[in-house]
Amino acid sequence: MTAEPIFTDFEPRHAQLFGTHTVHLAHRLHESPLFSDARLGALIERLPRGSYHVNTMDPHTHDPRTRREGEIVGLSGEEVIETVKNGRIWILIQNPGQAEPGYDAMMADIYAEIERRTGLKTYKQKMSILISSPKVQVYYHADVPGQTLWQVRGVKKVYAYPNSAPFLPPDRMEKIILGEAHEVSLEYEAWFDEYAEVVDLEPGHMLHWPLNCPHRIVNHDCLNVSFTTEHWTDNLRNQYLVKYANGVLRRHMPNARFSQSVDGVGAYAKMAFAAFHKKAGLQKARKRPFMIDFQVDPTAPFGVRTIEAVALRK
Image 1 (cartoon, rainbow, N blue to C red):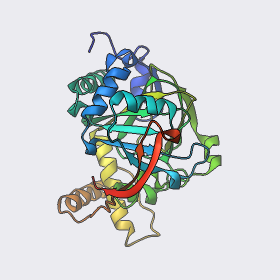
Image 2 (cartoon, one colour):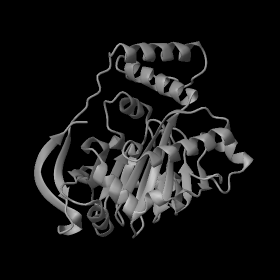
Image 3 (cartoon, rainbow, N blue to C red):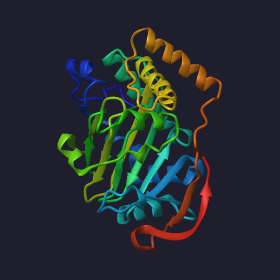
């Protein structure tokens, strides 16, 4: 990478805000050649099937039922990028560093600077690249680890919502953590937008929000390239374990109100219980197969050619 700082406007106050409030900062990573069409195309050509998702969805409604899973077959990386530019497609590339070590080096630089500036100690860092068509969207959802979104090319509108009820009912987040519900299973109401932080994320900008904050994204009328980074800290792990334990306990006491505090004897007992429960394999996540029902096709409308559905397990 470069000896220059990644962030260009990080101030001491951001260290206090990071992880507890939404933080919108400028960065230099959009200048990296790793995000050129040529480098992204070469990456796509080297990806194993288990390392990506490709989706299409209705851009005019907020209906998760329109979200479809596809695959890339027989196309060059350049053809895929051109199809995304002119189509209605969202490509998610997971762990790109496995195919191109430069992305892992970038992620290491990111977290080295975040830790130096904030004093946080992070682990289990991951990076994913998003290449998406004009006007497509990501439906309302919440992620389990700490999340940051980095914009590289194009502009997208990001809506970030409070991580509390009614935007994030505790029982629904618990089911997501337990693997009993998909992250996009959260219910969304249009009036939620009145309480969202809304940012038009431009190239060279990033957005970090507190743990589990629901969010949704709508691309402007342009190709978008961005990437996400995710991480854990001891505090995030403790919050996860408490919510995990609450989810298991709620099966037996569905109407009880469970504390989400990570302090005190009760919280420590929950953490120990959750750690034992996970290690013993007592929670079986409901891993449903992905049903692939389209292929990316430059000659098809919106780049989507319907095929007979097949199951993909990951």
